[in-house]
Length: 249
Image 1 (cartoon, rainbow, N blue to C red):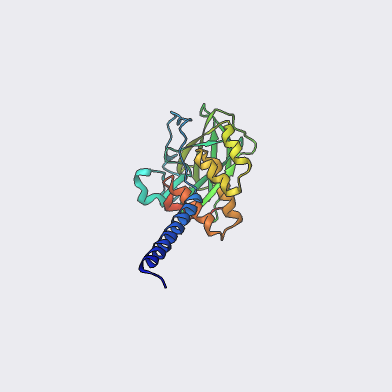
Image 2: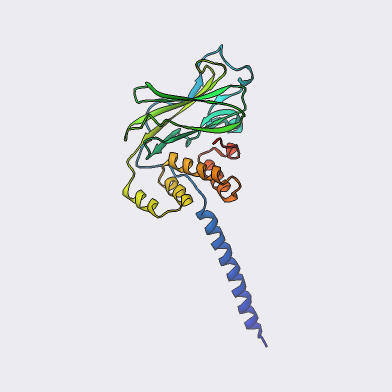
């Protein structure tokens, strides 16, 4: 027969086991989260960035509520034209031809246009995407315009109301290509696809983190773990209100 001391012992053991399982589960959950950590060794550029409107006569009549990203107005974030970037609108990349992502709110515009400028403010690449449905997260690559290491580039996203140059809302951000650290490369060597996303995020490499995770989501649209990781990544950069918007392949 069990004594009252034996009963207390096994009760204590059961409680300890349950707590341990809970802590372990929480650890696993936390380990899979892709939280972006801003880099400390690469300071943000001093260039002015923001957004606005290119003209007053060419606006899509239904789009007058669309505004460039304004982090002070988070309640209306879903109505803003947003380059997917951290709050300081600056992202690092280790790629010569990175992918650029942007959120386009509900609009009657016929297209959206990405423009890449060098450090002198000269446009060096441009790409236009037709819009079939919005809101949507779109992306482009400038395959024929490699980025130089250590240089800052400005990129702009504009909505196009009719054929011709974009004249409505636009928003912008800055990208810098860096030489990857040896520690980063070693960690990436044996990492799985999702682990690579987490590594990039921890090292503050925004463009590879979001691009790799977006590719995983597009290849496995019903994967709930990837959906949760995507939401966590965007939430860590104050983009949570648009985390459930569909991605365009």
